[in-house]
Length: 207
View 1 (cartoon, rainbow, N blue to C red):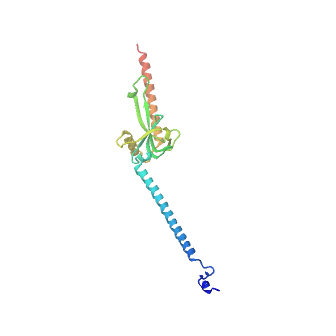
View 2 (cartoon, rainbow, N blue to C red):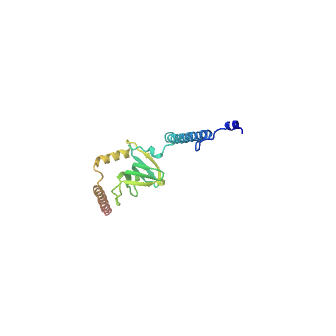
View 3 (cartoon, rainbow, N blue to C red):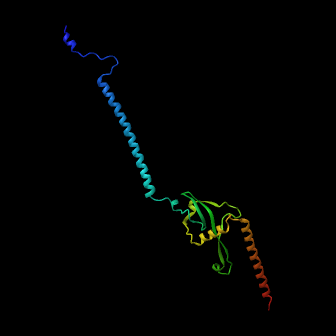
């Protein structure tokens, strides 16, 4: 028997012990998975940074939202497609509706047949709240009903009239006083009308 050839053969590996090649290969797979996870996290972070940067660029460098033009220190005038105009403070403005607080509107009175309307018509500013249906001092207007709106300067007649009303009514509007004032004006006009009729009749009886 050839004892020399048997002695030259490698000894068998112990049971359960990994071969050197297999162990090396396993180590490489584990290291590669760790780096892959780090790479995925870095890529996700880079995408998040890019998205945030794009949003910031759009917010500061892109088109401004309409609501950003509202000056909270000024009154606004809201013009409706019906021809009505309301003055107040715009609190909410979006593509669906507009919320207006501290509301005033113009009321026209006077004028009669056979006379010049410009000479006999007066325009007054009325505070919302004392109407027959007693509304709250807030109005929600459909956005498609608004033709345009604008900020008002403090030097304008409407802003000055509102400032005077607030100064004269520090505790808010009193509807009872306003109603009494309206009735008094109406009765006075009625008396004047009856007096004019009486004068006209007396004149007609003269030869």
